[in-house]
Image 1: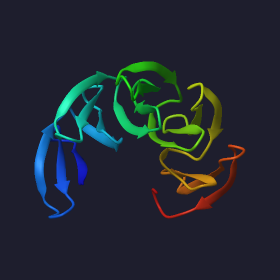
Image 2: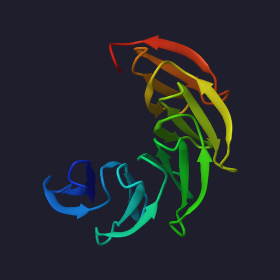
Image 3: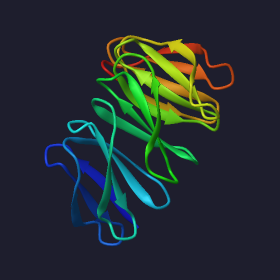
Image 4: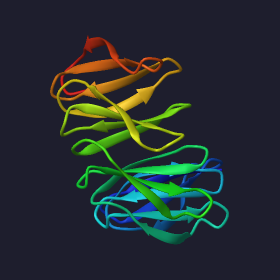
Length: 193
C-alpha cells in the first residue's frame, strides 16, 4: 500500500510506501498536478496547467493514460461508476467513466469550481467565483440544485448528514443538510478557513 502525493511545481506524483514511509518512486504526469483520487485500480490526477487527467495504474505505478479535461482541472472525486473533475477556468465538471476511462459528459456548474465531494446520491461542487454549491445527481449527472453559501467558498467535507463548506473571505462554515440540500446553519470561525 502506498500514499500518492501531487508535486505541483515538478509535474509529478511521489509514491510513499506505508512500510518504510519513504518516497520510492516519482511518476511524471501533466503540468501543475493539483489533486488526486484513488479507485480500486487507478490513481486519477487533475493537472491544472495542462487541462488534463493523468491515470496511474496501481499495480505497476506508471502513468498509462492522459485524458483531456476542461480549463484548469483542479479537484477530483470518485463515485462507484465515475470520476468527477472540476475545471476551474471552464466552470464545468468533466465526468469520466471508470470502465472506459474517457470523458462521456461535461456538466456546467458555477464560476471557478474549486472543490468537490460525493455523497451516496449527489456530487457537491464548491464554486469559488459564484459563492455557491452545485448539486449534481449521481443518477442523471445533471445539476438539480444550486445552494448559496458564504463569500469565497474553497473547501468541502461531508458527514453522514451534512456538508460543511469553508468560506474563506466570509470567515464562516456553511452547514448544508444532505436530506434537503439547504444551508441550515452558518458557523463563524477564524480568519480565512
